[in-house]
Length: 393
Ligand code: GLN
Image (cartoon, rainbow, N blue to C red; front, top):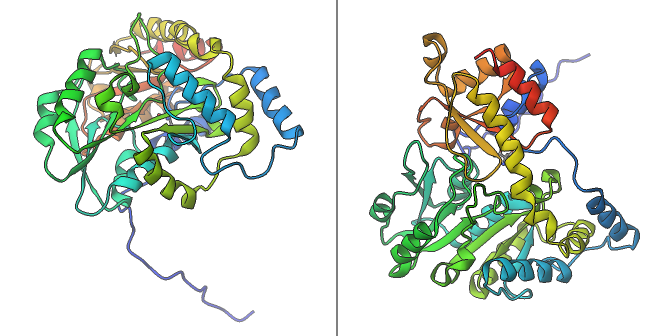
């Protein structure tokens, strides 16, 4: 056989230099490889309500399988609008102000792309979910990272206000907060509203964990605050709420002028989101019980994991919302507590058999606080097996 040199793809400069595979994917792969209990990547290891899958199957069998309208099927947009109005008292026009997306991440990417560009600054609050900054970079804008208060992950409005400049186009907020589990109070929301009142800054409010708040706290949707709602893209997702993270269906609620710009981008990077699932979810949404009961459902799981961690030398941090529990390992013996968060998570996965994710993955500078994040959206058996293994700590 004659030797042929393989033809190489032309080299080109990376648009996202320094970005590797997400920590969630890395830890899930390592957990699978080592047989560890996977409390790293946030996803439930239990099924969804069979009623929901039946409703999607019904829609498919009814022949609802062609392109839906670009903005989403009308019954789903109406159901989303109704839910927001009932829960948060703000009416979004289903036709002009609600857009169905292929999950929260696509909604975030599209919202950032439609309003931020070269010369613009976008404020994110660290630690922040890992897709925010790459979206800002792909838009050609500059991410300005402002830290939340270490330990509590509460917003520090003095620091946020100090980061505002005439170039600030957008601020990204996230309550309930991934990874910190903090839930913003109404005082926080009013402070944000006052801070932005005299500016032209837009707001992207990531509320995908809206139905997981504990200890009697209330989710403070931006939709409750007219001064914020008027400038905001509110993003939520059915993946978290209905235990179907693989379905990738979410939405953006935003005033018509913002939605017009969002849809210009949405129609050319996604165009439409799969039809039968939209119909299935629209029908399932008619019953509020599943989302209204979610906080109680996850409270039990949170308690189970917290009780297990409390029996170890890990130090529990507060968890007011989301399905994530953070813990510090600064009380462990020197060999372990000297590891940085990423190495500690590798050690925990390999040696103890439980995967978690390092908080440093949510910061720009790999800030190391000896804190890791566990996901408790798991069956009791899974949490109990993790507890058995973690008891060695
Ligand atoms: N949102 C999930 C988490 O925080 C992960 C989703 C993903 O793997 N990108 O764990």
